[in-house]
Amino acid sequence: MSPARVNCPTCQRELAWDTAPFRPFCSERCRLMDLGAWLSEQHAIPGDEVPGQEGPALPEQSLKDST
Image (cartoon, rainbow, N blue to C red; front, side, top):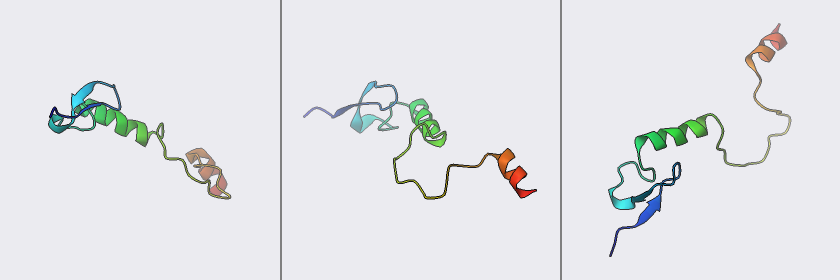
């Protein structure tokens, strides 16, 4: 049986699943690019909005509100 082949979620390069050290990514670079996208909120898991919360407050707004 031949090893399973998958595509890297970041660059779509094909790789063998059982020998890829950074699976499901083809390299550490692709893994870090994906992590950066999650941290910068380019990727997100949809969910219900919290009532009464419009979004994160900017630092300038929270300083003005507290004075």
